[in-house]
Image (cartoon, rainbow, N blue to C red; front, side):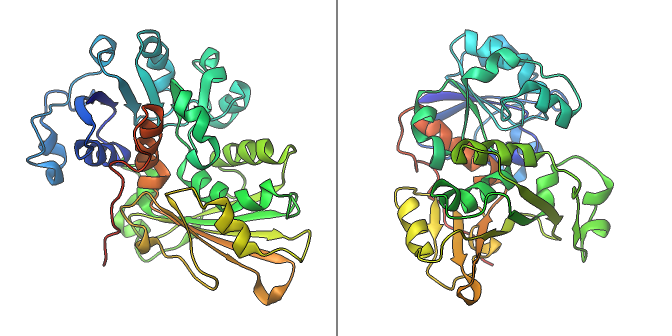
Length: 343
């Protein structure tokens, strides 16, 4: 058994981590922290976890957390900067679900997140935790930057096309929709029931924080900078992301279905659906699966890729556990073989 800790275990990604790690056969969840809820038992915040042990929230203490084999940060940006270095120095591996180590350029990070990067010295060893792209580096890593939810769906959708140079890199479009839980558990006007229910809107059209993350990954894969128009939308539902991706083909003699099936044949959490399929968010609710479908309307030069994920699982906490499994030498799917909940 390995000992795990969660810093910031009171948000939506935090409770997903709790749910997954408490059921993981190789994990002893040893420490859960919250500055605002220190001293409160687990079930007082999350009644769905009643009967799952006697864990009590405590204030974060590096000395206590360093006794863990791995520590997860489920915190706002900037928090992991202050603590990750000391944990790594004490031999504890770090898996960060925030944006703190996703961008390799600290100046670019500061521009998008409105503050100086707090730990630029750690960026060279931070591994971007998209297993379908970085499986081997993840297995050797001490510090993992878990991808954002939109970047996970969009990157997995575009990846086979970009890797093989099948599309015009300067004409990529990502039209993506997310449930309200993607905004976090904090109280804010746009997340109120009366504001989000029976409504559908775009946001972040001039620029979204996940854009440079997506561009960084696609640039690395393509060997050049792509042009991407990314428009996120807010859906009146709790969980899920559906990304509709558009690209212009460079060639017409390619079997796109075969390209996707071959690319993800060894990816246990990417499900390439049969031709003509339309993945739905409810089909992946509560699972670590990214479900993809590829279309070529009218056999023209436009390819349309549909990508559906649960933003809290494959888009956050499930992917973090997938990274932990690879990092610690466990089977990649251990503790993540859940079935979607319907209705």
